[in-house]
Image (cartoon, rainbow, N blue to C red):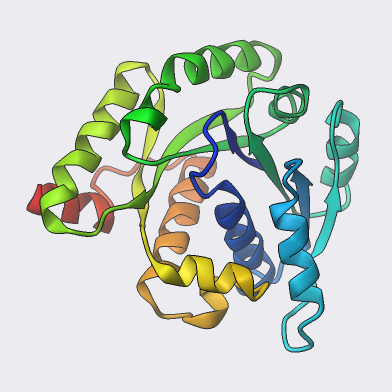
Length: 233
């Protein structure tokens, strides 16, 4: 699996999500993982440096790549179980090159108007890259969602806006939690700081939903996150 976490909107938690997914596959699935930092801000590279400086945290392979990265990513696929790509929040040669080989693309968006305004361009981006890479499955995931019950309707409405563009949206979401920032600063992950916490369950839910789609199974119900949102929204 080559999983790209990218999109046009910055500040939606792409790096944090990519890091936690990499830890999930490495720690909980005992898989070989290559984490690729394609973001010029080098957020994930800084995170990996902090991680490798902590003797109690397991090593995760990480490289920086920019530009025409297609063939480098394809070579990683032959040597690792999972290639997780963190790509910057803008349309670029790097993003399109990564989408040309990715099997899965996660597009994090916050349920905010300024994030939703990027949907027309993201729709065009996904459509054009799908013609080059028909095996690519792109899905939006709502991140940094407000946890107050009276804001649940806002999250559901944002999902519906995404669906009007024909874009798939995960039922699973992440909520705004300090633990995501705290773990990133330490080079760690929410899965390591609070393995049984709510943030860890959010990450697992996102990955399990992706893997269910990978296996070709249909989810006839809704996730715990979606059920909660509908109940309070």
